[in-house]
Every structure is written in C-alpha cells, then in structure tokens.
Amino acid sequence: EPEVTQTPSHQVTQMGQEVILRCVPISNHLYFYWYRQILGQKVEFLVSFYNNEISEKSEIFDDQFSVERPDGSNFTLKIRSTKLEDSAMYFCASSRLAASTDTQYFGPGTRLTVL
Amino acid sequence: GDSVTQMEGPVTLSEEAFLTINCTYTATGYPSLFWYVQYPGEGLQLLLKATKADDKGSNKGFEATYRKETTSFHLEKGSVQVSDSAVYFCALRIYGNNRLAFGKGNQVVVIP
Picture (tube, each protein chain N blue to C red):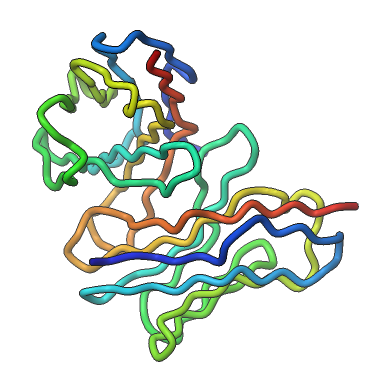
C-alpha cells in the first residue's frame, strides 16, 4: 500500500541553524501539507501546497518557514533560523483531492530537536 | 474558530472492555469529522470518518456517529484488544479549508 515517507526520523540542530525536512508524498496525490506537534500539545496545521503554490497557511507559518517541491517526488519544509520553540514532531501529509471529505495520509514524522 | 475537544487524560482498560473516547467540536462551517490513530513509532493513520450529520464511520470494530445536535463524534469499540493500544486523535475539516484541526489526543492502554 502506498505511503508517505519522511526523512530524517530525528534531526538535532543548534539554535539559529537552517534545517530541511523532507517528505515523499503518495505518488498520485496532488495536495501536500505540513503539520507539527509540540510535545504535549495538539497537532497543528502549518501549510498546504498545490500546483507549486501555497494554498493555505497558518499564523505559525511565518517568514522563517518555506516549502518547496524541488522535483516530481519530494516535498520539503525549510526552517531558516531555528529557535528552541521549533522543537516538535513535524508531520507531512498528502491527499489526492482538495475536498474536505478527502482523506489526508500522514507520514511517520520527523522529530526536530533544537538545542 | 474551529476546534476539537477530547476528554482529558489517558485511558487504561482491560482486554475485552468497552472503550469510549469523547470528542466534541465547534465549527464555523460544515465539517467533516475524522478519527486518526497513532501506533507507537508510527505516523497518524485514518481510522474512520463521517462527512455529514447522522453518518456513522466504522473500521476495525470502532464506530463513531456524527451528531450535529450535540456537536459530537465519540469513538466506541465494544471489546478492545491489546493491539488497540495507541493514541487516538479526533479531527475536523471545514468545507473549503485545507487544514485539519485536531484534538489533543488520548493515549489508550489496554492491559491483558
């Protein structure tokens, strides 16, 4: 069964450094998403992406974040200058359609630790 | 805004017991409702969903009914197994929006 994959599974970085989190969505999906979960808190929406553009973003997704689909398979989240409060589990998701009834399929997550 | 509230705290129960996890929501528009499950070391997996009022989603013995009058989507299973130990998340998605809004999740531990 097709699945969303994410690399790395765990990333440790120093405050102020740039990190890139990578995702490979399901191959026939057209809509891509990033969410994050700070320890002990809710899973929060960051951004959605379709047709090489951001289609929706949350107030969390400020100028230090960016997303890109550099080729036909990868979808990346870049954090330019990491802060301690960026430490969280980051989940990538994809869906075939944009409909609110359609299922978003999630990857296993990348645990980001900022020291 | 749109939000989901799940009952507080982990749930510990014995094998073959009845499981209920409460979920209520507030929504500015017309939501679709979802339950996701996260097994240890894995990502979020869709467990079931319901897209309109009075719909019942079901999968793997779990059920949840979309109750518009009480704005609820409680998850139930009649007889849990040790393999059901996981974290369960209730979520909604409003028509026209891309984002899922999640509850905090409930850790379920089933003891043999």
